[in-house]
Length: 441
Ligand code: 5CA
Image 1 (cartoon, rainbow, N blue to C red):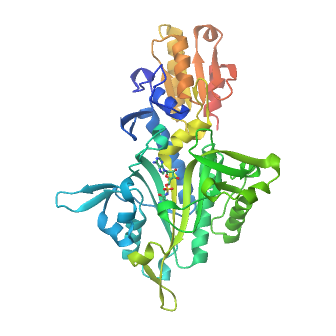
Image 2 (image 1 turned 120 degrees about the horizontal axis):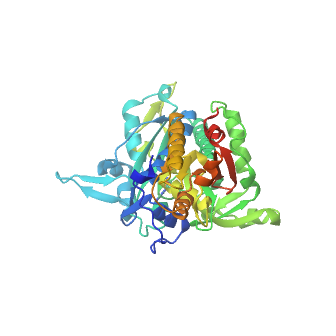
Image 3 (image 1 turned 180 degrees about the vertical axis):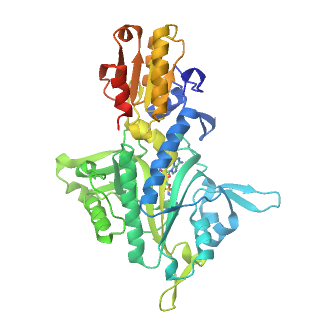
């Protein structure tokens, strides 16, 4: 992509409405634009990041055995009347009346709709286990939408729903999501800690929030420092191995970690003092086991092998896909801007032509640009006629992992500069060697 033609409305000044760094940087880097309170348009740069995050979420859901489908954003109120949540959900639900005076709503979550889909198609123990998920926009009319995409009214969520015959099977489904979540967040460069949590309007009695520690987080959380040290990607996971999956969950849950609502002072005090962490946290995912809370009222039952029918055992599992964009920035930025982990970066390389009027610089830059593109490397080429200072500032602000700088002085010796955004480390390299850093297998 050539920056001269790219829609990247960056801002020099800090927007006054943004209170936290991720919101400031997302606005300054031209990633999003507010459409109305808590509702955002995703501009090209932000949309790229959102798609990359979504793809990691999808890959890990699929690897765990979940199956993707797509449910609508608009739902009928009747289903929510069946479960009893239509009145309970209160003002957070956006209620809509269609032209035939039918009550509709913009989905804040999908337990009812997925249970309706399942009950129509599944009748016996042979039809489970299933885990169905989608990645779809939600609407919650939050009283105080704030912090940009972190607490929006419209936001993108991955929500999965598991269906099982027995409590033990349902527990395995829960455990699989638990482990898939650990892997998902680790792949984004985040340290997300599973913490015992309250279940709120979703319900149930077993629940974990996945929390990343950040000063700007909205939740107060407590944990043992050991919880921060595990590496979920250190070993491969066989999701069909019940005992293996359970042992991973056990390892995490044996270490104290809880949100404010579930905090246990005595258990916390028992942690050696040097390992106690009391911090602010951002909730990036939340998983629930709620048994038959929805299947009972909605009549989603399964016939057991002996013919007896029982309500299906369910859990639901959410990830805040759009919130993650902000959360990753909270976890990874510096004074000059965003520092994207490679796995979610909107482009891998920023190519900077320092002197656009110079024939040699433009020719060399053009060649590098073509070579990178031919190798399938995503590159944003700054071919604008701007000062070097402005170009460096833009690249640092938008935070691409690598910058390749082509200037007249280096080029006279056949060299370009490769800079790593995270460390600031710079290296002068012959063009071929610089290209080989990205194209070598
Ligand atoms: N049905 C369940 C699980 S699928 C559910 O809705 N869970 S939730 O309410 O905890 O939401 C799941 C995730 O969505 C949260 O962990 C959070 O990361 C994200 N989320 C929730 N509310 C917002 C919001 N207002 N703005 C951005 N992300 C949000």
